[in-house]
Length: 148
Image (cartoon, rainbow, N blue to C red; front, side, top):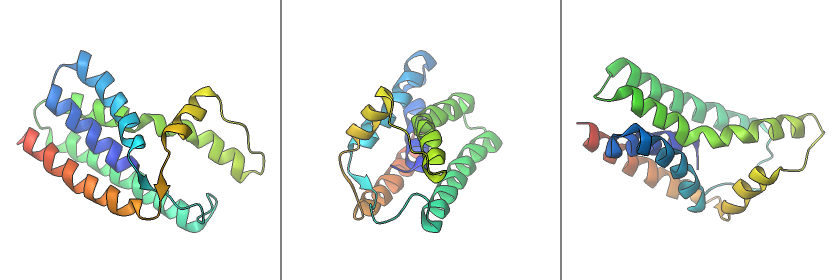
């Protein structure tokens, strides 16, 4: 899933649970649950391509914008919502060094955590963009219903 989906879902988990001792680990686990769901991916789009880089930047900007909006609007429990949003997306940061190494022409084998994260993403397909769009709309609606 895209980072924006992980971020909004993590924040929604925080809003639903409220207790930081339960919400923070649940937000982190939400990342794994979302990655099991079929989502966007296209083997034809090389990770060094302009399209991939643009998608990555837009995704990061949307996630950062959502977190910034929480900080500015300060809904009840906003600090927990931000922390849960960050934790919801955080495991994807583990891919960054591998991407850089691949761009440098020195790809490395995945460590055990990376192999697990790759394994649970069993279905990355071009039609997964529709799944992600539906998930994003749904999670935003759920988030706002929990924080309104």
